[in-house]
Length: 299
Image (cartoon, rainbow, N blue to C red; front, side, top):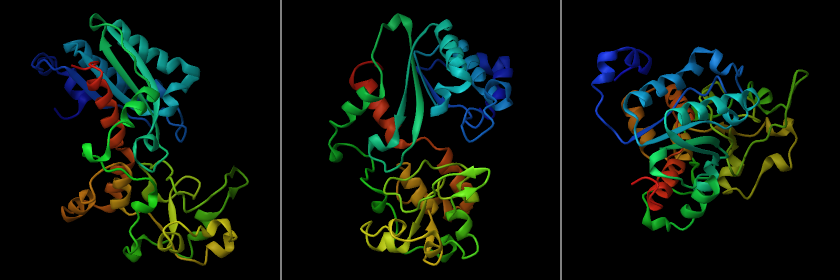
C-alpha cells in the first residue's frame, strides 16, 4: 500500500480495498508527546489520525485498535482525545480507551501507552480497561504462551558486549549530570525496570531520560547499585554502557535473535534503536488481543 497519505488520496485504490474485520495501528506520537512541542493536530504528523479515519469510513471494519503515547489522553486539555473519540463514534463505533504499562505484561520497562479500542455499535456494549486486561493476562501460565517474559532488566542485559556500547570518559559527566540551570532532573543509572525506550535513544540523552548500566551492576546481577553509594564524579570513573540494539528489542518483547538477524542484513545500529523506540510492546498488544478474544469482544 505504501504511504497511507498518498493511498487514501487515490479513490480507485480505496475502492479496491477488500473487506476486513480489524484495522490496527499507531499514528505518529511525536506531535502529542511531552518530549515534543505538542502541536497535536496542527502539525502534519498529527493529521495522520484523520487518514486512518478515511480508511475506516471507506470500509467500516468491525474493530479498530489504535496506539499512541500516554499524553494523548491529556493533550490540549483533553480536547484531542475528545476529537478522536467523537470521530470514531460518529463513524458508528463504541469507543473505550485506557493507559497500559508494558511493565504490567512481563516486560521490565515503564512504558505507558494509550490504547484505543473501538467496535461497531451494532455489536453491543463491552468492557475494556488496563486493569481487566492485566487480570486476564495474569491468569496465563508462562508455558502456555509464546511471549518472552522477564521480571527485571538483569535478565535482558548481556555480561559482555562490544566496546562501542560503552560511554567515553568525555561524555559520562554530561550524561550523568542532573542538568543545568534551564533543565534539572535526577539522573540515575542501573534501573531494575528500564525507562521507556525512545526513538532517539541512539543520540544518548541524560540518564534521567535514557537507560545506562554499569559493569558492576550487571556482573553482580543487580545486587550492587553503584549509584546508591557513589558520587557523580566517582560514577564517571567506572565502566558504564548504553543498551545494545538486541537488549532494546528484548525490552519490547521481540525475540533474542531479532537484532542479530537485522545486523546481518546490514541494518545500522542507529536504525535499530529508532525501530525499537518506535515499536509497540509485543506483550502489551498480545495481552489486549488475548483479552478481547477470550471475552468474545472480538469474534
